[in-house]
Image 1 (cartoon, one colour):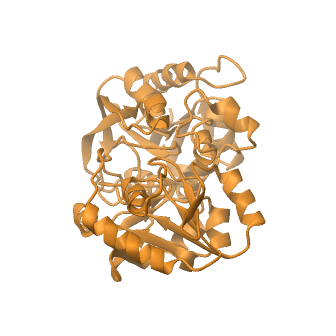
Image 2 (image 1 turned 30 degrees about the vertical axis):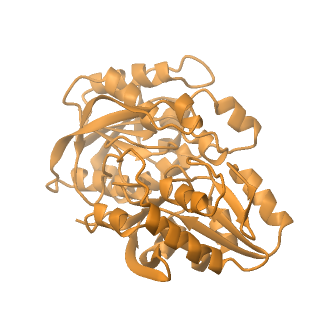
Length: 378
């Protein structure tokens, strides 16, 4: 008889493909993203989570979906694993996710650890009966559901706490999914699809994203005025998505994109809604002083890794971390209730380098210091 903590692993290997491609999601666009040369990243993010569990491998009994949906990675990392079920074909599908999640549950697992985005969480929710404990490793583009850890490393550390018998509070977390067709048209429409039981240790599990667009016009006008003063000749500004950055562009009389990444040069838009490869190519073509301006996702606090995967680790390093700037009104900062900004770039070393206090543009010639972390604090 197998003893130890029984964990099921299920990976959506196509999750997140649409992020660096600037496609606002991955549903139905995987082949398009692959044709653009975008590399799948979900498995690498799961590897980061599993690295936290290597010291506990003797305590863990793994059951996994076959092949690229879990079994292959566990074996590569030296974990003993029993695979469950079969894949329908060479390319994985939502039906695979639903069927295999139920089969893993039927094996009597203590926890289902899965990787994907809101679509994956929705499939898991539809397949599992109430009460099955789950935890998501964030690998999608936009993640609105509350069933995900703040980043892969946090997921691994939380599983380690469970496997070690530490006290972890459990709760029901909301599963939400976005209408990606509307999303690509600049409209955020999310819908509640149910709840899943999750370990809810506050430092590790993200909050449900707050929707809606709040524009504090006068404050954004002030910040926009300062931003224009900061722009030297031949300077390039990469602006991440969000209502705050869009409001800044509108205050400057420019038509940017709410949900895409835009490029500003000498006070004018050089490119809008760019993908990661397009942005990298533009950086090769234009020498000069480069900056990145991002804002926090309301309610969650992520400044990197949620909806702005176009700003990849190689682009961050090329620009330089000193030239990464955050903009947030005081209202947005207060909405975080003291929680730090979060970073989930996909590169754990980079996330560690970003940890600490960072200046935040919050008004005309006004900056505030605010903490950045790779995991939330209580």
